[in-house]
Amino acid sequence: MKTIIIYATKYGYTEDCVQEMKSQLQGDVLTVNILTDKIASLDAFDNVILGGSIYMGQVHKKLKAFCENNMSSLLAKRVALFLCCGLPENFEQSLASAFPSELREKAIACECFGGELRTDKMKGPDRIISGLMKKVAADQGKTEVVKLPENITKLTSGINRER
Image 1: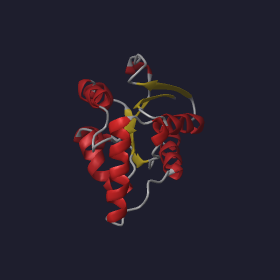
Image 2 (image 1 turned 30 degrees about the horizontal axis):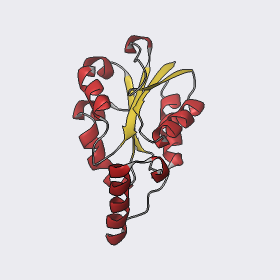
Image 3 (image 1 turned 135 degrees about the vertical axis):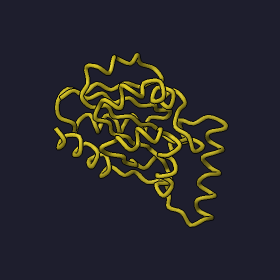
């Protein structure tokens, strides 16, 4: 089995999750950061895993465009989806805005990997927005941003099992 993981990352948490997925997946695995790497043809892969971080309620526009522009190829593959989002209670809403419904319905797994605010790597507006997000979440009694590594294992187990 050959798997390609196509993702977008800005501050590194998503990339850390991708590397953990890669270590847990069986077979050949290629990782592609859609922001910096060239994407290989999907023809050579049995599994396609797509995901990224949510910022301001959206996944990166390059990832979204890739999904829309490659829909027929993606629908012919075993697909899994993931999001890294600081507010897991918004996962379903974020998933719906990130990926087309056909892809969500086809996916063998959809998981939230939680998040991590790496404010030390953030600049100006992102740092301010993250601070506001934390304050609003606290005021509303929502959970702190948490990592959900067990969901990485759930997703990879599903891919490995469905051979």
